[in-house]
Every structure is written in C-alpha cells, then in structure tokens.
Length: 126
Image 1 (cartoon, rainbow, N blue to C red):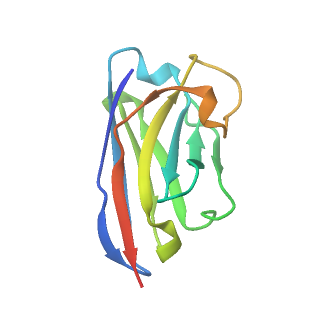
Image 2: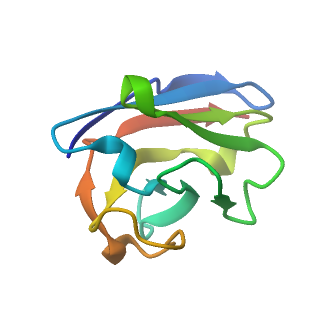
Image 3: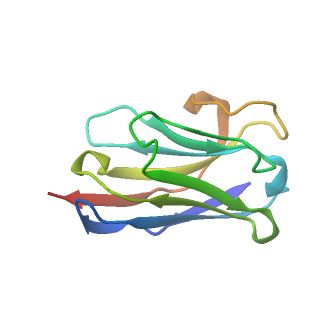
C-alpha cells in the first residue's frame, strides 16, 4: 500500500482542517487504517483509527469529540476531519495502514502499521 497524506496547513485555534490520505497499490479496503502525529521533540502518537470496513473507529482521548476519521473504500481514500483545533494539535500528521490485511481490532501502536505516508504538517496558532 502506498499512501500520500495532504491537507495540512496553518489555522487559528478553534478552526478546522480536513486531512486526506490517498492510497494505491494493494487492496486498500482490506486494511485497517490510522492517523498518527508527531510534534517536535515528541514521540509519534496515535490519533485515530478505522477498521477495514469502516464499521469501527477509535480515537485518542485528546481528540475525542473534535476529530472524525472516515474512509471511502471505493475511492481508496481516508480522511481526518479536525474541528476545534488547539495549539497542542500542532504536529506532522501521518496516515498509515495496518501491517496485515483484515485484522480484527484497531491498533494504537505505530509498530502495528506497516505502511506510512510522508506526513502533512498542521500548525495551529493561538
């Protein structure tokens, strides 16, 4: 699976952004997907995940109620709608695909993901 993230930018606190992840290669619809982020000087952290059929989602506590993950398997796309953005959301955001297809359960560990996009930068100003 090849992944390309886009949609990052500079936004004021309280604003919104929608990140996109375009997939190509192996059968996208068979893979659980996730969004991760990495702020300067910090570890990469799980933001949100969605299973291969889009029937289950999971979120980090810090983004629950503000971010929404979705996917369109027909278009090989995944999205992250980010609302009520805060300065602490500033990071490079990465989309990732599970290392194995049709696994049960969404993983929050980056080690469970075998395919990564190049990242898109999100900056939230106060």
